[in-house]
Length: 311
Ligand code: SF4
Image (tube, rainbow, N blue to C red):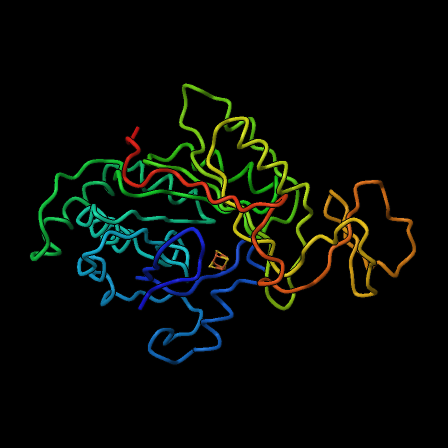
């Protein structure tokens, strides 16, 4: 139960399900596909509408084995329809279970920043640890919680420039980027090269899978990997997604695509007017066949669990 195939975590915890779309990275939302398919059932009684599941709040208190937990894989905890008081309860449970490492990923970092910098919210979460879970052990409530990693989704430079500053302005033990689906070139130098300031501690990248998946230009992945290497930031290459680059010397197929470094893609059978020298040939082979290797190896780097000091 709650186990997951997501490569960068061990299990999921969904005290909220459902969401609404905010940017191009949401276009083919996996959570929407699943919630729509199982709408009306126990897991998604209201389909993809934002739904609180208070009966799930205490689940991590019962997980004895320490785990890395992705919070709200089927929603966005900072969605406007999730009340502040409910988010405080989620943070209280995370405070009461320091054996687990929690990963929260959002496309709504403005609300995350505002709540987590708020004394009122902090007090509300601390109060919940005292009154909400009488059977749980008491812990000193430190802020930011040392076992909670906060991340933002970054699919393009436009959203990097909106979401990363908000993330860096939010108190967190670990700050990370999930660049999946990566839909264009992204530069993060200016957010990394600030030694005295909060910075980015982890970068995950991945291509898109599913029926209408868009291809990821290999240079986007390499560029982010190289930026991470230069700044000694752990780098995790999650997957290519549905499309994989066609190797040099391989014969192209009619169903292949050309994609330029700026993201413009077109069928390989069409005239060559769109070429600018940065194009590569991509083939839809499916997520499993496309695999997880970038330049001949896997990249599975992560921050240390529960060993990063809050700042
Ligand atoms: S924010 Fe996440 S869960 Fe919500 S619609 Fe977008 S991709 Fe789906």
